[in-house]
Amino acid sequence: MEVNVLLVEGQTDRTVFKTLIEKIYGFRKEKVEIEGLGKTGLNLTYVTFRKDNTVIVLINAQDKYRMKDILRNVLSWANFHKVKLHRIGLLRDMDTNLDIIGWAKSSLRQFHPIVKGTSLWINDTEIIPFGLGNVESENPVIEKKRELELLLTLLAEKESTLSRFQRSLNQLKEDTGRRLKPKDIMHVLAIAKEYDGDSMSGLYRKLIEDILRINPKVIEEFLKETGLREFLDKITG
Image (cartoon, rainbow, N blue to C red; front, side):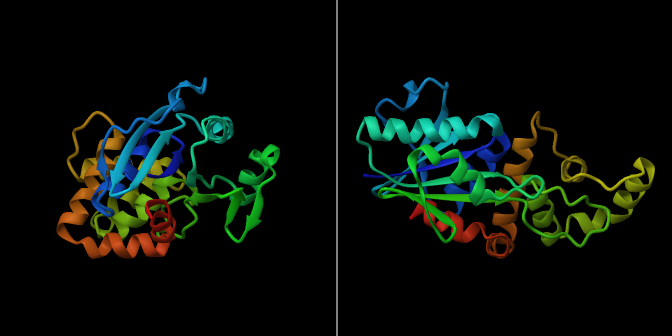
């Protein structure tokens, strides 16, 4: 059994990547016993997926500030229980000029990681950091806040939903006197989609599933343009 770990910041990230892992890569949610992982002392929230002989452990850090500690504890756990981790994917918002490789290397300095290209290596485990939001939006009303929601605004633009509401977005920008944050755009999208769920995670899942059903080519283009295709290919491979 080959075990890969995917560590994300929070619930919305977990929902988006759970959906992609299942719908794009064909993994199925399945309870796989991972010895000792739930006893690392950080109250880990995780779910496991399996496809053939590959298992993905998706961990929700619940807070980006917990990610460093969780990452170190996962590596210590794997070492103690002699669990061979093939790859660890790290997903977090780019925020302001975040050097994602430097952040990961600093977080793991006690393990003496070796940097090779866009990955770090600790013995035979490849660690792949990925910064969410490192994309450009040409829409003049959207603030370039580099986070998960900026990726989703790009997806909504490709799908043409936002263009149908551009006049409303322009007016909202004028009313607030500032550019709209990507999360503001997602709330507008919730209204546009007549989404009546109780969490934005549900909206994000519905957005991806609807596009996959109607025009899967848009999702493929989105994954390639954002770099997520290459990242996810490694985590699922």
